[in-house]
Length: 306
Image (cartoon, rainbow, N blue to C red; front, side, top):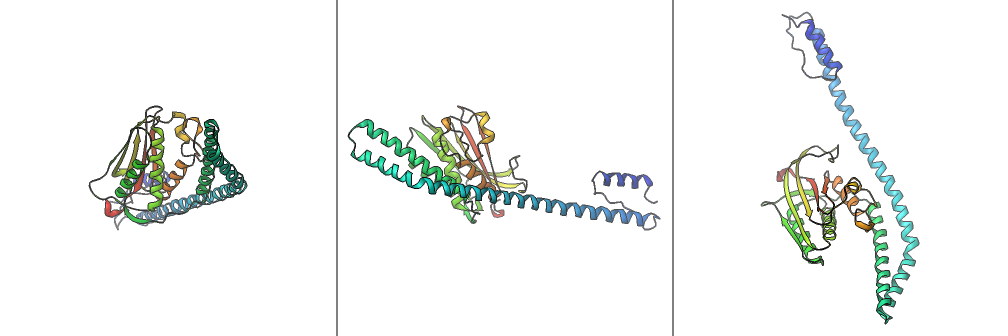
């Protein structure tokens, strides 16, 4: 018995709806076999063409995004270079004079005022440097390394540098090695930024907990070009001042600072975000004002580490 006319109609309707699966199975003696063979071949060709179109569209989107980043980076680099050139000399003069006042003045009030001037000059210099770092975006130089060891070293470093009252840094690592292929300096920069932010959020002391896990994670923040798979997850949690709800959607925007009073250059999280994205990962954040914050960094694992 041949394939019924209804089966052909159903197949054509499915094709019209975009479903190319389920080829028609016909016997050699079926008089409509050539039609079924042609219909199956058409579906295979349409499916292959659709896959090629999807790959080409993804490549075009990636190229457009890269071009936009390059253009944006060039503009910011020119702006930052111009600012550095125009402000460099007067900032140095002011800084030197402030140091001279601190050294020679006898009035405590004058010395205190000069120190404030020097501090603000340092803030301006750091802002210019941050702008240049943001603009000079370089591709990662990847190598294989143990992520757990890098996190442990950075936690120890932040412990030794923390001057705040009763700040405790705890690292919960994995029992075995956790190898990734990434730029260790860039990943270290991401961790340092998150840890410094956590320390600054603990104005009256408190706890910072860093945790390393691995598993299969998916997220709406995951870049579309990155397939789901096994990742390392680094969580940096503090019980500090937290971030206001209306500020959360903008924390990765360049020059936006979630700190109270607008302190800071507002580039640290933006730079951390593009570093992680350049490594095929993403960052998530959960926070509540006066309720602490948790930043989660997801990075693809090497197959040998899974």
